[in-house]
Image (cartoon, rainbow, N blue to C red):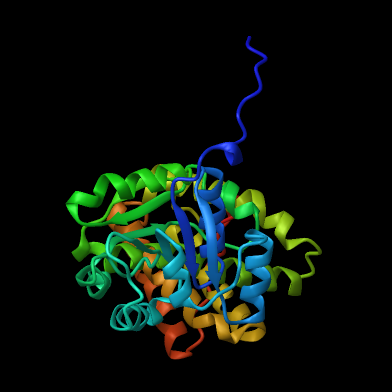
Length: 318
């Protein structure tokens, strides 16, 4: 086996000067990842104190400058701002002449494709939409999480290879998303990832109230297994009182939530109804049991106490 020392990525010639407009949780992480691939971060903009701290952590010695100056210095500009801010930012940069012909302009919004960059395209920029399907903390651990992370990629056909190459350099896996499918794509990710956080946080709060000292330790193995099963089997992984048709258990759940966490009742009922519909369609929930179950859910939605039937006895953590 060769013992020759491998070259340090920092010793490679820099290929692109990288700028970041919006030092939120995403931009500095992507710039740091591109730096590992041999590119050179040259400027970053950030307004809040948190953004400035984040930039200093992830991109030390990279100067903080206004957005227009970021574009002056960079060949590749990452526009990592909130979705609702992006269209106005692009229009403003184009109207003020900040955009340079031949400049790669990359946004990371999941909602938008490449068309939101049309004002910059008319100014000669090369538009790319690269959305990492990952949740970010804005810390160095995020750079490691990019390994194998899927990116939703949208760009003109002539820039497709360039877009996919940048994703691969960051350690990601490019997944081509058609312009017209970007809103649906982003909705799907938000439905899974954002609502999962809410569900887990609510579950941990209820476990603490039930006297569990380490709800995270209790939930970790259970939720990990449930997620793995769901990714492998979809609806076939459904378990628990709703899928079994245990109307009495579900009624007891609703009563407990009304007593201890009334703000969670609406979410529980909505998810239970969606679960019941999917379990029925899959053939997991027996039709003869579904009637009582759906009655409990309807009573719960109207605030009427459901009739408690026999409790489920199957040893199922769901």
